[in-house]
Image (cartoon, rainbow, N blue to C red):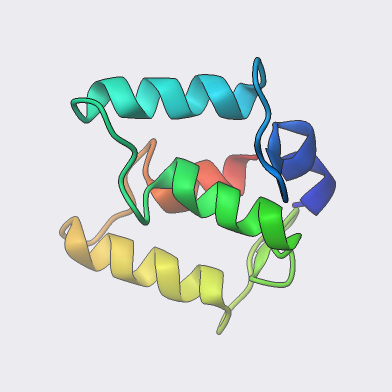
Length: 98
């Protein structure tokens, strides 16, 4: 995964770019949660990584999630909270897909 992909999707150091994939994602997440974007959710996590240009260094790579990384810890926590698997559309799978 490239930090460039996160920026191209609209997650930037100055916020989410209007009219971007990030903006659409934020809108969809807000609608599905009743009007807000939750902390730790896909949009908030991608924005954090985009602002810091840290997706790759956090363990999200083009060949998968790096063992022992922040990304692997996120995946483990998410799987634990969902009974053993990471859900499609969840934070880990969304960040990895970008």
